[in-house]
Length: 492
DNA sequence: TTGTGTTTTATTGCCTCC
DNA sequence: GGAGGCAATAAAACACAA
Image (cartoon, rainbow, N blue to C red; front, side, top):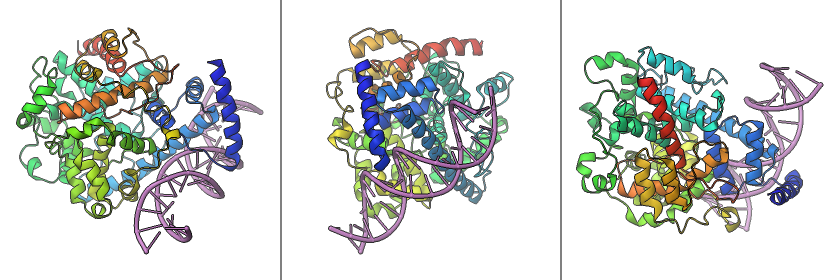
């Protein structure tokens, strides 16, 4: 370890020297890890930074710089996005709240006024005091709880994730949220809290939502969210009082998804919440692009499910101008909808943004994001190793992922060694979970086409030796346990 | 192959907080 | 005053079209 540190420092030295003249791109592995970590901790502590630096073989300075720039990037994207959404919302006659109920500042984004900074305690108090809270916000709340827990520190700034991703995950595919909602569903308490739960289960856009375009769905959804309690008067509150899930509803998703697509339908196509995210750029970064590359080679690309013509994919088709140029990208995404996880989700987000393609970034995303940059063998370095052989645990992971289960058994299944890790004392452990998440996601996409549970998965995360032996199961497992206590107490 | 546009990385200066 | 963060800037890396 020390040796490697020395090596790292040596490398850093040289790299620093080199950086004087040439900047050095982060390897995909590093980027993945950084992004993953960034999702958990926007403002890592010094300790965490050094740990990450050590693990990734970068200098703390680089880490700090990267985080700094990453935040800037987030901010910039968020600003652009907010502006875009504001325009869009106004154009559709919808107030631009974006369901957060907070931070209605338009393009301005201040550190503390930012909508991202939702004090979990406030959320909790509001919920407990009976204030209505949009489902998405409730989801966020749980996510926040979890994130804090993960960090093992009360860090509101690490409330996690880029605003974009955060929102995206909140309304879309955050695996944590999924897990949360799943857990909740499992306990029959807040089962449909998660919009995805509704998507997965029974929610289908009713009436006009079915007919309207997704862009309008977004607007409608926004209105619904703003109506809040008022909207509930005439019907079941959005995402709150749906029928409880039957026990074990998620336990046999493979069969369900494959054989009962008509029941499940295609939630994406008429998912108000998904639609609500339209226009929300997910901060696609290079690692995601790399992911797409990696994923494109994945075995599961063969197992595409024609049922999954995601709404955003469809929109991609509709939003056409890019199609002509980037037919490769579209082929890539559309032809293999079930192929991967993270990218696919990001594809959705990107596709969603394509609804108003005026955004330059959208152009770029379709322009280059999917082709990605060159991935040299050197760059991919630690990324892909070890995962070729991980095929059998997929189903295990997946099914285990679906239900709150003791993490120990899961980990045992995955690693063949029992690691009863419950807390992410090591932030990188969190990062490393992504590897298996991807596997889970792949399987999920194949077997459970209606939803992808592993949005935030960063496949092929480099399994550094001293890093995380953890698995994707650790996160949801510990999460479930934590949430078990917390949810029970809060509900009680 | 080259030019262009975009993204990413590194550096620097300023600001805020402790 | 130091540390940390933000913002601006320059430059490298990259993709893509001509």
